[in-house]
Length: 76
Image 1 (cartoon, rainbow, N blue to C red):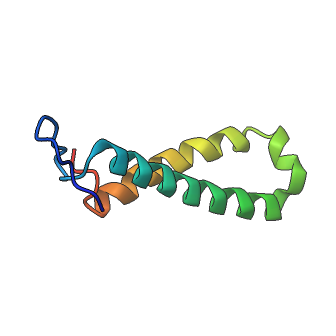
Image 2 (cartoon, helix red, strand yellow):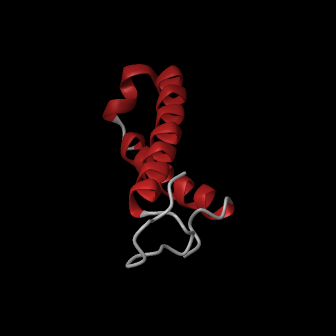
């Protein structure tokens, strides 16, 4: 992974902002895809009409935060 070359900004985890964004976005995409596919297999197209579809985004967001903190990537 890249490290920040300019000393004006150093993240607490030692990575530059682009790498932090990439890791967070990739983790969100992976978790969201897994939850989406499992939900689609269970409920089919009806899942788009339910409140669960919106709760899926919320659960993914919190799961990403929990995972990145446990992996010590988010050290805030």
